[in-house]
Image 1 (spheres, one colour):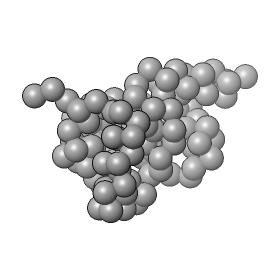
Image 2: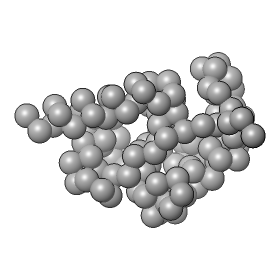
Image 3: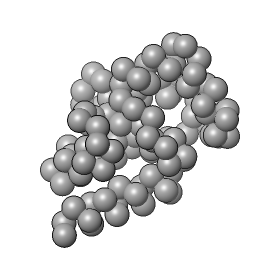
Image 4: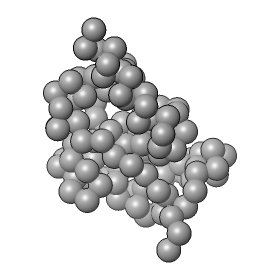
Length: 112
């Protein structure tokens, strides 16, 4: 029963935020190097994104792994689609694929 509630919360976060990052810590204070790297990449690209701190809730920490069937955090979602973790996001950034994905999905850049 509890898993269904956590999955519902996760789905709601993904649905209401075009770029959603499940991570350790938050975008102002990442609490692991992998999470910090993804925050840095997204910040560098200038996209608006939200974060959910998996350290704040053991249910969320396990729930996101079960939800995506991906064993590690951070996890990036763009317009509802699971993109991957730190290594995948880093590779996509370096190859230019991440920029293309954001353009294709029409992800808004932050207004300076």
